[in-house]
Length: 190
Image (tube, rainbow, N blue to C red; front, side, top):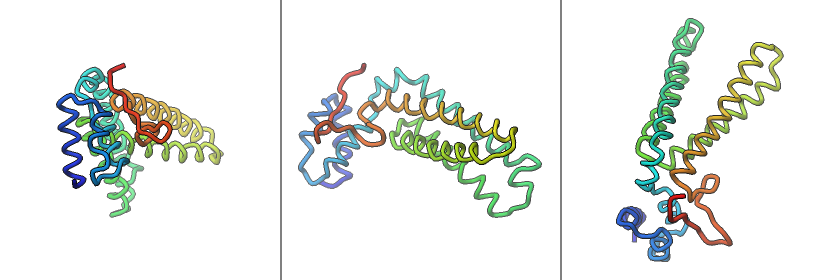
């Protein structure tokens, strides 16, 4: 069985109401790695969970739009990237975050586990940059701004992690959970 066929079969079986552990045991050892199979099962968004957490999903999408607009506004300010005449560098500096924000909006709207995982990783990377900036900044005003950014970023990491945990409870850190070498899946809504 090819990877594409296996992924489609996982979606079809889970959509029809099959238990996750039954899907895993039925499709394992059929030419697809257990890791890939566990990822597809863990990243399946249960419609009931999505419905119960739609408020959180919309909140994340709203936060993403606000951050996108703030970033574009900062780039267009008189002392921003665009006004300094940096040319292609400024377009990339403004374009890359816009593309990431659009990816997150799409992922949050369509309930993709990968979007939540990438968001968590990028936020953690940003937190380390802010933390280093807080340690080496001599100016008090800049230090306050960096500490504020760090605090908001930390809160955002925890919130994205919380929403991802509500929608995709089978993930541990960034991969499906294992206990004693065996993949474990949450079957019912908590």
